[in-house]
Image 1: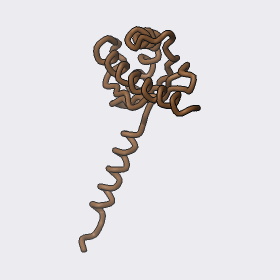
Image 2: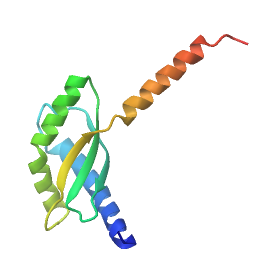
Image 3: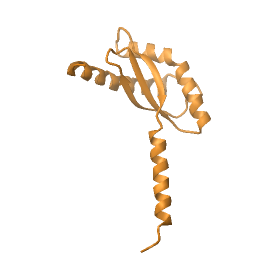
Image 4: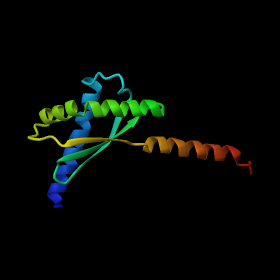
Length: 121
């Protein structure tokens, strides 16, 4: 991948991230899609596929439901991106659950627990 094509896919990924966040907050009315945050987008070198990482607040069943809702709305979101970003063909969207915030919160809780168990010196 050349430097310019990598830069183009990075710029497109940032635009896609912003546009998807916008469409989720203003256009999608599916009740399954609750508190969803777009945490990142990676676009393939040929710009035919985009992996959208999302974080979902709630229990595991709510996360599964939100992922179903996102996958159901995939075509609508792709059409919205093509129009919004003036793309000839919008990339195929693949939604994945980003558990990074969840893991960070769990690590923080463990560290706090260890800190509380530490004897005072």
